[in-house]
Length: 394
Image (cartoon, rainbow, N blue to C red; front, top):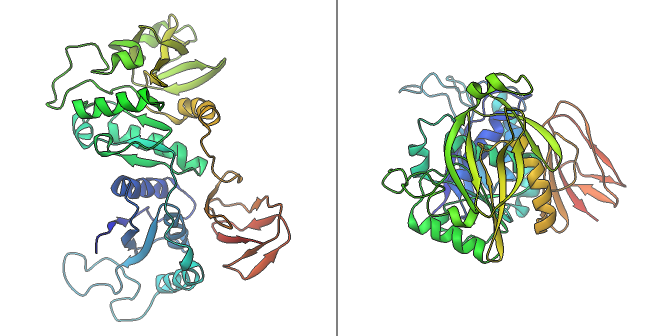
């Protein structure tokens, strides 16, 4: 049997979610574009807050997981992990985590025929192992930029696939290239064809700066792609230094980006010096000594190439994505209140997970039934804090 798998360790907290988001990113980064079920072959049995394991288990279902396997069943009697805790204590007596796993198993039995869920992504997020290594000494490493892009879609309840560009068919409407420092000929050719044939690509700083041998491009940056983006990326500037002459008296790494007539505050250690060579400037840094082009768009073939001279950051990416989702006709995630994870599993079934400490009301215009609670709803319904819900539309 061939399965992608990983240990899922989001931490022991119930009330915070950054650990869950990070661990879900780990699933996607291992899964790439595989449609095979994913197996979480290790799931925590340590001192996690009651119900946090169950919360995490439901979150993984939205990212293609099919297995929740506690590590470990019985607390070990010897070896390097003999101090780790299982579902059963050293003397063979079950503890509270056993009961939580039993509850998970009982509930999963009710909905198992609807899973595993296969993500239906129209967006690709580029990952490069070589770039992860090459960017190790950068202020904003490739892995962190990639997770920043992932988080944008996590909070929007939208599917996105992590891809290896040179090995992907790139069957997407939108492709993010977040700090992919290493640019080889095969990857550059794939990006070129993707845009030429009608795709939209968004590239962020620290991308296409070295070739496959790790040598800095002597040609115009972004290497092998400058004509596609219609720009020349020259040097970079250090934000903290230039803030000495900030028109807004900003200090540290804080900068203001103006996009679509709106000002956005963000932070960046460095920013790219961009010279448009046919591209249109759609965003600028407006808090320093002068305006600096920082977001550009360029038509190439049937598509377009957008460059952001900053590391990937949700504060900057979200307003741009609002526009692109509408223009490209990308399907949005289910409409839910903030603090709720959700996926449309099929035509008549929805999975929800309230990851907040407050009850959340889900707007529902039709009759439905909870398969977890064996309960009918006439319209709107409320999900308790940190609780899941699986709904069948009638």
